[in-house]
Image (tube, rainbow, N blue to C red; front, side, top):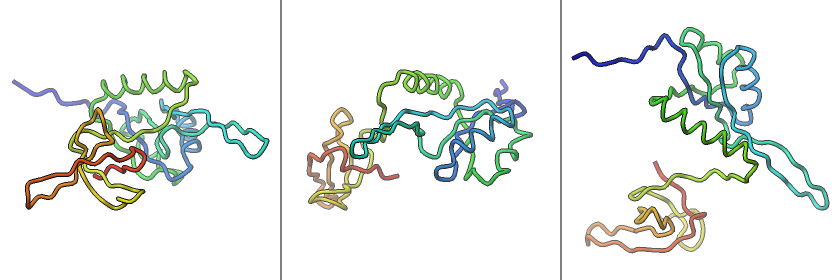
Length: 170
């Protein structure tokens, strides 16, 4: 009973991590090379005094998604815009998620990048009186609650902290 191995001669999807503020230039390179790609852009409005400026910015800073033929992968590094290309493992899930992202971007609704925090995720408090403290998310439905462990006592303290003050740790 042989295992089905992926065909690595076919174009594969990659999350292309670009250098800072190089997403649009990298997308132009992909267009010139004829590679299918997607740069998720959202409209942003800044108010400077009485002036209102509208511009598009990447939803995922420093990332462009691209389908690249393996024999042409070196072409994406030609202008020194790319840090690394991360191959997508599960393309069917990725393509469904990419479709969802496209729908959100096309809707015109405001979208803000939000870290994915799950139960048990280790986080660090970044502001307030507990800045620097580390703990675990107790309940993903209420990510404001983190548990600070005191392992030697096999105890924990549940503390309510504003989500904006939490940074996921890897």
